[in-house]
Length: 293
Image (tube, rainbow, N blue to C red; front, side, top):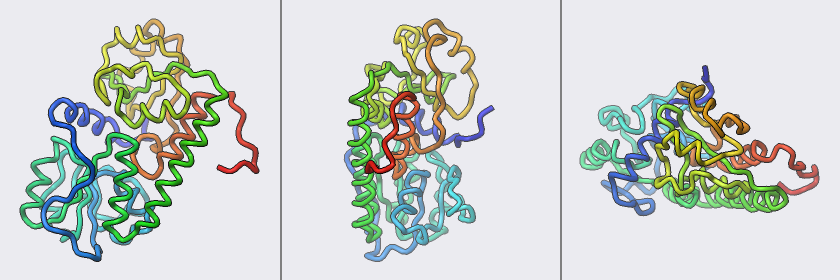
């Protein structure tokens, strides 16, 4: 039984499936409701990746409320305001935030719009792709007066991506199935940040034509995809044995993500990419100690 990952991961993935099919494409970061004060002192976040961003910017002291699924030790004592799809309007409003950071989706749209109508400043931050994630870091940095810190985070991730791409040139590209859940089978498809990072790591995403970023995949299609590596990013093992026993999948090498770094679209993506590269290319020579990282 797995206990290392929060239920948020699969929940968010399935919500994004709904978003892809039920809502038109969203633009970049945008404000909703009243304008936040010039000096933001009280921040509420509705997903762990945005909490991570605030902390990484050196603005953790502004946090006054976080989601049910936040596990960072820095926010262990903070009030919980619900989850990605069920934020509590009453709890958020009661914390009197100067700004609420939101990953928008159909599941939370009504609650977030209600918060804005009653006078709560909202910053909507789509997090579907790596580009979205980097743009969100810059937007949060600007809102919190941490532009230089945000740019440093962005450049750090881009530097890691460039370095991993270069290392991947010397390795054969494995065929990979990246799994978020087994029952139903949910995989990383085109447009997801995991799909982008698989390419960065020198891999072929066998679900690149799945039709959506977080696709519910048929077992027959999974068998036909003939992966060489299956990356298990699910938070529970329910249904895994059945999938692992399928023809072609039973012949694949199975690996598990070692941390949340690859699963939260935030400042840890660079570290997550390094972990992914190590999983996919275990025989690759590690950089010398004197090689810039």
